[in-house]
Amino acid sequence: MDKTKIIETIVAQLERDLARLKEAARATYEAATHEESKPENEYDTRGLEASYLAGAQSQRVAEIEELIFVYKQVKPRSFKDNQEIASTALVEVDLDGKHSWVFIMPKGGGFTVTFSGKPIQIVSPSSPLGEALIGLSPGDVATVETGNQAREYEIISVE
Image (cartoon, rainbow, N blue to C red; front, side, top):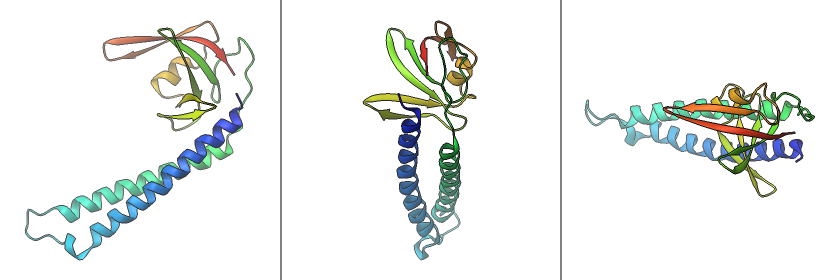
């Protein structure tokens, strides 16, 4: 799979998410500063809650803008068979007989994009799955513990 095209797909999805979030943040800011948001009594916190939400949305906008910048700068590496997994590796894994793809990006993650009809999970090296995969090679098994359950991902291939 063409990792440069996958990154372009990720950036396009992030840009769509950013546009929606900016619109929501604008609407929330307007609600927080609107005349009707002034408290009617000491227990009315609608305006305060709207301002907290606007602040959180503004912070999320900045985070997505940073991710877009980082992803546009990333130069994906090519990995050969038996080469250890590192950032920008596209890893095919088998979890309980189901094959899936994991793309390790230097930052962000926690979402999935569809590329060539295949879902690709984006993770960072500091995520539980990313951390478990880093340094392994095809044929190895990455174990991720979640609560009282352990999931084993057999590494099929690395690109």
